[in-house]
Length: 152
Image (tube, rainbow, N blue to C red; front, top):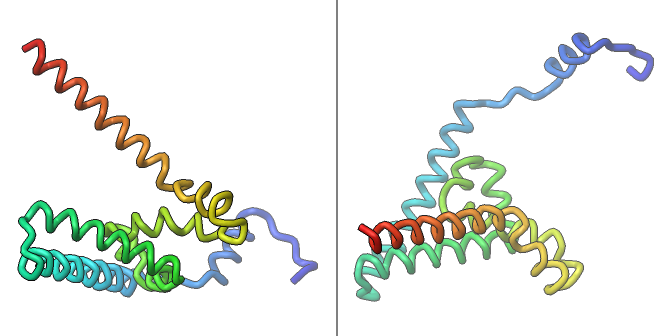
């Protein structure tokens, strides 16, 4: 193998031959099932807040989002969410728990450097730009809306 010489086309063909082929149907089904389970858990938490804790619809929705973010971050910290993500793919990334995972994962890589310089400084490495863009655009839209209401 070490004495073999490949041109680009031969190398591409060789890589295609030895690369494992993904099972697309299985991946689609797993993403659908796991994403559905996460959403069902979220609905159960929402129903708990509305029926047992007796919160109104808006407060229950906010509490549900906070709870799901906490669960996603906690499971990421324990290393469980990464195992779920390996099996579920997009089914674990798209729900709000995937957002929590995207915030906590980079920070966990630097925990050996300490909580301030490691975890704290790397907490928003991936999700930070998304949050900054979202907050900035919402402020801009709010100012435009306010200016329109003020002058018209």
